[in-house]
Length: 245
Ligand code: NAD
Image 1: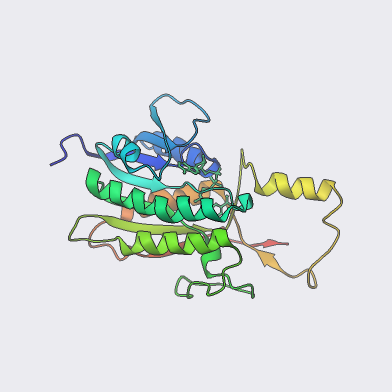
Image 2 (image 1 turned 90 degrees about the vertical axis):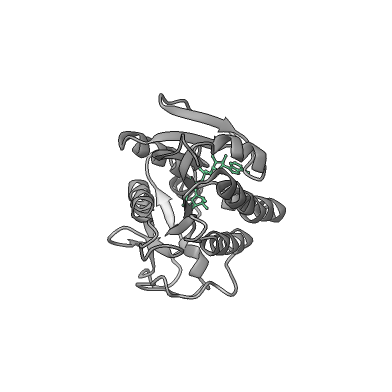
C-alpha cells in the first residue's frame, strides 16, 4: 500500500526545538532517515529534510509524512507563553490534525511527548506511578491542554486500523542548548530572587536529562508493536534521583 514506507523512516514534529533536535541527532546516529516538521527551521544537518509549516495545517503535514512509518510529536507552544488560544489551537486542534494526517498518510506509530505535570494537583507526589489519575485542577492552562492532547493520542491507538500510539511524560528537561529551564533559574538567581526556601528545604523536584528523554522516546517507538503492552499507554520518564530544590 505504501511502497516507499520503511520502518527506519520517521518524522519529528517540533524537531527544531530543544528536545526535538536532540532526538533528531540520536535518530540519525541510529540509522533513521529523518524529516523535521516545524514552524521554524533552527539548524541544518546532513540527512535531515526540513518541512516548514504549522502542525494545525493537515495538508502541510501530509506532504511531510509521505512514506513515514513513525512520527514523534514534540511540538508545543512554550509553557511561559501564557496564550490560552494558542495552547488550545496547537495542543488540541493541532494534535487532532496530526492524528488525522498520520491516519491518512498510513503512519503506523505515533510517540507523543506529554508531561509529568498531567498528574500534578499541587500536592506532593513521591514515587508517582502512571496509574495516578489526570489532574482535575491542572496547575495551568498549558497543562490542561497537555492532558487533552495525551488523551487524544492514547485514544487514537487502534490495532485494527494499524495505528499504534504511546506517550512519554518527562518533567523538567535539562541539557545542552536548553533554552528555558536552567537559563531561567540562573537569571532569577542573578536577579536575587532565589533567596527563599518554600518549606523546610526537603522538597524534591524531578528533572530529566535530555538524553534520557530521547532514550525513552526511542525505546517506546521501537517497543511499539501490536502485541506490546505499551500500546495506548503513558510512561513517566525520569532520572534515577530527583533534585533537591
Ligand atoms: P521547544 O519550545 O524547544 O520546542 C518546541 C518546538 O515546537 C519548537 O521548535 C516550535 O517551533 C515547535 N512548534 C510550536 N508550535 C508549532 C506549530 N504550531 N507547528 C509546528 N511546530 C510548532 O520545547 P521543548 O522543551 O523541546 O519541548 C518539547 C516537548 O516536550 C513539548 O511537547 C513539551 O510540552 C514537552 N515537555 C517539555 C519539558 C521541558 O522541560 N522542556 C517538560 C515536559 C514536557
